[in-house]
Amino acid sequence: MQKFKWRRIVLKVGSALIAPEQDGCRSRYLLTIAQFIVRCRAQGIEVILVSSGSVAAGSHLFPEQEKRSVTMKKAMAAAGQTEMMAMWDRFFDFPSAQILLTHGDLRDRERYTSIRETVFTLLEHGVLPIINENDTVTTDDLKVGDNDNLSAMVAAVADADALMIFSDVDGLYDKNPNLHEDAVLLPEIDSIDESIYAMAGCATSAVGTGGMKTKIEAAEKATSHGITTFILNGFKEQTFNRLLEGDNPGTIFKPYDKPMQEAVHWMTHTANEQGEVVVEGSIDKSTEDGCIRSDEIVAVHGEFGVGDTILVRSDDGTRLAKATANYSSCLLNFIADNEQSEFSEKMQDSIGPVVSEKDIALLEKS
Image (cartoon, rainbow, N blue to C red; front, side, top):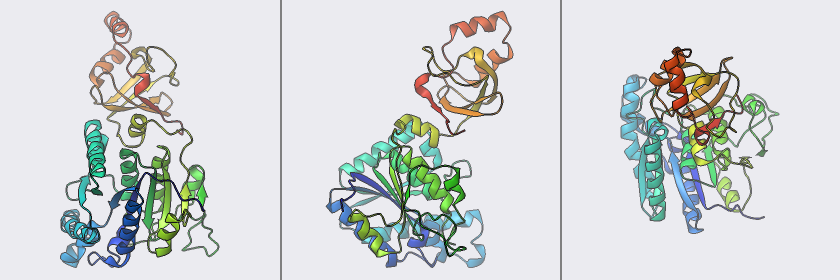
């Protein structure tokens, strides 16, 4: 059987593999994963590791009755992160590097580019990047929330060929295998739609924060960037052997035939909209002077500045696109509120497009 042709891969390892008993890190499952990483690197494949488990790893250091508070979980993450990194580092005879991220880091274009450059530099010098969400400092506004989606964002940052999500499930089933004995494992998914999401059951692990739904979300993010995505059982040693033999031991999600460009993918799947512009009808990307003109604006919601990501929707509520704003909400509100004034008409004639063709990502599924 022909082997997979990978140049660079991202591995996401769930909390259930890191700390299966929630009493600190355990090498029981991690050793096999580490050996897989070593074997991949020996074949010239660059590896990036997204490792969950800092909260689970640090849980045993704190009183049981206090573990439910958000502040306590942040403390557990801080303590567990060092334990988790030390565990990984023990397995390798090459250097590793810790990168802690929040969604705020990824949705800021300048910081996103900085992360990208750092990852590439580490790989160039043979250092294994180990990435986790920065649970100690993140807030509701800044958190990704689960490492499945974080791993997809990292795979896009790194221009990976494949994303492998390792958990305690064999892959995607047509129904919840814990409830239905006749559930069938789906080895290959050509495209992700609502029927695929409908197959996602609840999380099968009490340790992690993500269930099958977040894994499908991650697969959708990654495949739209041209990244082949796997959902795999990391508890089984044969999983890793079969991967290196070119076999698919779980569920494989095929990448888009025409992947999104990097900047458009970032805008669609990573950047959060800071405000909203309402227009009449749909969006015409074929115009030479840009997609959206100021005289097409019906309303402006929220506060945003030049260069911020905004949502564009039609007056019937349909989400049309995410885009980079060429003008602030203050100016656009003034134009929209004074549409009939002579001064506003002069301004409309003098300013360029509100959104340019090169800075828009159509939300085709909406």
